[in-house]
Length: 125
Image (cartoon, rainbow, N blue to C red; front, side):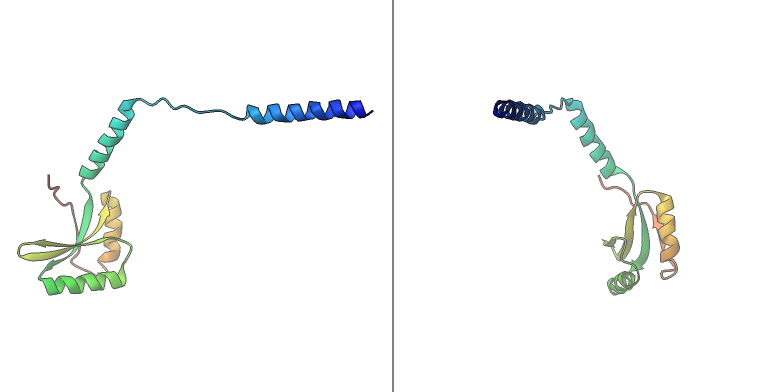
């Protein structure tokens, strides 16, 4: 009886060890170098894509600072950019990927900034 228990124990123990060791493995990913090149190209294209912005102010510095404060009090979900193009300061809002997205934001922004409009900034290369 004792011999049966010992044999049974050894059998289960060896089965357990074999199952545990069967779970080990390695994964090797063979990836073409062209994929990395394509990813870099995609990043460059994304950087150069034209985005839409909304301009809410164009004028002197003090007016731009007031407009910036008023905007942040009402809206804080879009990034704000204070630009200086001689001799005027401009406030641009957002970085919209599509015109539709910019139009939706413009509807909300125009309630507070009636002269706001959508623009497509020129890329500086």
